[in-house]
Image 1 (cartoon, rainbow, N blue to C red):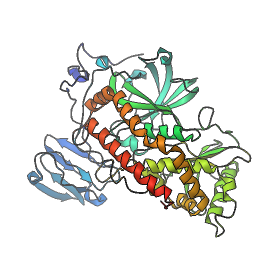
Image 2 (cartoon, rainbow, N blue to C red):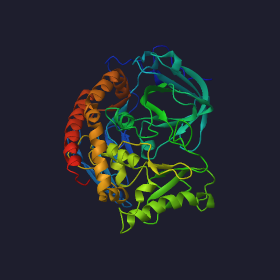
Image 3 (tube, rainbow, N blue to C red):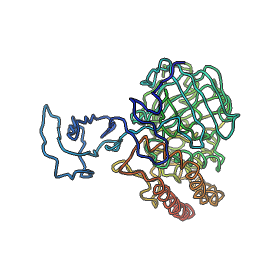
Image 4 (cartoon, rainbow, N blue to C red):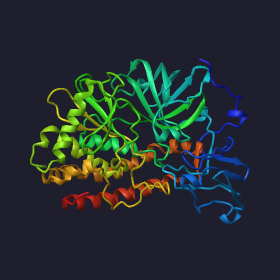
Length: 484
């Protein structure tokens, strides 16, 4: 396998190598973004932003240096807005803004020593990974400094993954091995995911949600393995390796022909798919995999099962119409509690929300848990977390309907109280994870330099305070049987 080689004691483009011991970073040329889908071009200090005004993007007043008054020219061309100014600009008004003042740094992989497992991926001929659809071949090597049983060398395929997250600078990936592999002692499978946690300043939000899934015993909850990723000889940062959400042994363990796994997601961009009759839920069928023809009769049983549940929820006779016979009510309750604890904003759409059913008379369940970039009090207009801990979670009317059932609210209260001590005790989990990831976060943020926001110790402190306040607030709300 051809590997990326650099001169001795150097990084890419001959930059001096560096470790993670707080020495000044040697930086690659600046990489700056203002918004997920709008181009920002940097020429020294003069920045030109195009096509901003027609898309509703407005320059904010949070300009770091020099001050905003140094902006000196605004002009129009063919309906686009051009701003020429000195210093970085942060844009607002985009659905998924990126901090505008990110500079990508460099960490010497040879100096990397964080105590976490290292996953080295070398693509054939150092090909860049530019697609979410097209796999390219690669060699992968896993080295675990704590447990050599986890070490692995194998051939794989790799591609990009994610919706919004694929547009960020730090990319998430999907691995697909040629043969099933057991990674970190988990059930053998071909497909695995590397989550970049790019927006998450703590790097542990997903791990917290998955840990809550374990505490509540939510079926098919994912595992989390924090790792370092080196791609074609370049350190890409701290990642979480976890299972691909799919039907199969060790995943969502249902019959792959007569059961179903679906994703509710307003992106609604993958076939086969359908909209439900009453709540117009955007349903994308992940399993079974008969064809991409949404009208294929093999998928009729999936549509019928979900629409039958909707009809009972929508009916005037609800909740006294045996709707509970169709669902695993504990799975529904636990899924909604966990998402409320972490204030996951995806359930209002919904996005990245999974539902499953095994064959025959099995009941519909919710899960696995997924996607927590817009959780923990995230505010997209300011791109920060840990805001408004004393606020109930906003959820889609489909989910809100369950709370019109007094028995559902009582079970919600019961399940909350049965796990309250463990949930409150997650502050210790947060502290322990932060300690474990201390060296990793230093390396990660030496590469992904979020100058305007990330002080890791401060972010962990804010997360603990948010958690403490939120758990106390929810304990009062839920025990009072208040509606979300």
